[in-house]
Image 1 (cartoon, helix red, strand yellow):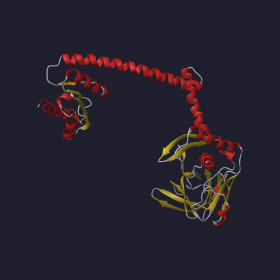
Image 2 (cartoon, rainbow, N blue to C red):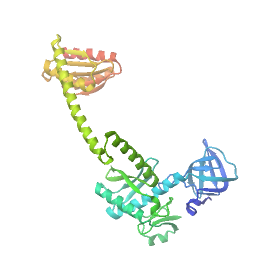
Image 3 (cartoon, rainbow, N blue to C red):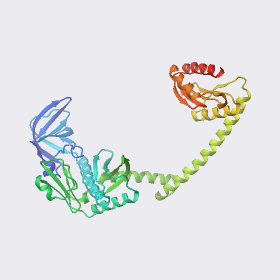
Image 4 (cartoon, one colour):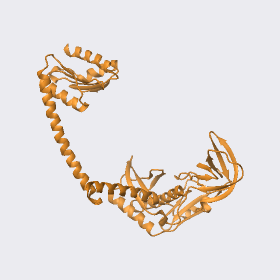
Length: 389
């Protein structure tokens, strides 16, 4: 049985103890200690990391009354010095206490219960049993949570028996029936939890909701606390300051500058599209004037959007079937005037597979891509035979 120092001495970051067992498993080793401050993964909280002497602890697992420490190298059954990754532990602890506070406030303000909690390296989330939270409601939640943080409410942890649970105003009943640990945020929340927690709400530092997502009638909140939140907003501030400098404006006016830039770009894009269309019209007139056969067939280096536009213009102005293809990309666009009563999409669907092509379309227009230009050429030859019948 391993003594759990992460409960009895939560602030402990370095200690000496005995290695009591070790066994190999796959390409790593599982080690037990007489006592440990390494928290095993559980309750939505990832495991602690750190070192046993100079051997890195890469995972911690609870197995009955024992705590298993996963390491890459063997350890002797002797006294060792253990060191906890304090930065990782503090991040997890701030977010776990922050989650309890956030969940309590969501119930307090909007009767939205927490269904699940995820504490990841990049993102921290809770899922709520509410369809949607509007911007003003999210601001209310944030303000209330941070108000409780500023009030420096005491956070107590203790163990109770199953019979003692009925006397507590629990947010929800625990799944376990033995060794039940309670986390009590003074006057705000009482919950069963096996994770590590700060000693007061002030130690959470701050809480910021980053974004929300709808999840099948539920709402997912992404949030950050403490040091992680500070680092995130330092990065955001640096980026906004750099943008403000580029636009020669203040940070609060960056969005207006970006909106103006988007409007200018949209206007320029419209002008460019008009010029491109005029150029396509001019090119189409030239192609038609030089055309002598019953079908317009020619290679081109246009992108797919330009090929589609050119195909429609040529078919409309000439009244003939149009086959445009890009040899480098083995891509084909076909446009047939409706007066010819030839269903492009249907014909493509019936024959593309024979030439390893993929595509489709409507009665008057279809497109396809081929694994090689030779496959495309064979397909075009068959298509022309069908059109000339």
